[in-house]
Length: 93
Image 1 (cartoon, one colour):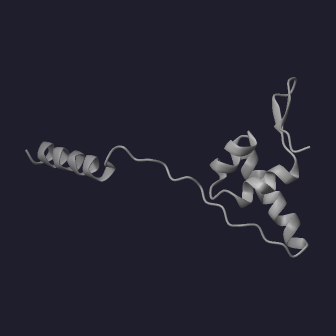
Image 2 (cartoon, one colour; image 1 turned 30 degrees about the horizontal axis):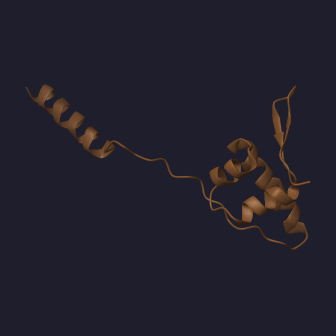
Image 3 (cartoon, helix red, strand yellow; image 1 turned 180 degrees about the vertical axis):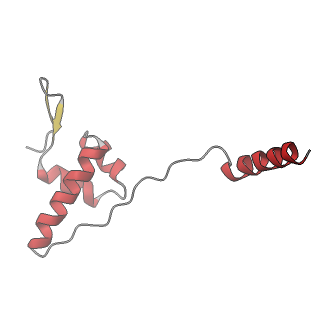
């Protein structure tokens, strides 16, 4: 019963509550949950919020999730500093 089902017409991936909760308890980010369940990150975040609210009414808590941090390959501060230097040089003369 914990199999992931794909509905072809709707292109929607469904997974059982049990599989979703197993993914929640074994993950730290929404992206990890989405990878384990096969769902999109936005769908995963929405389902997590709905599940958390429903379980809060029963006195149960889910682990806190984090968003995956983007990997920066460029130093933005240094790039901005270079732009400022260039603009100062151009404006100054």
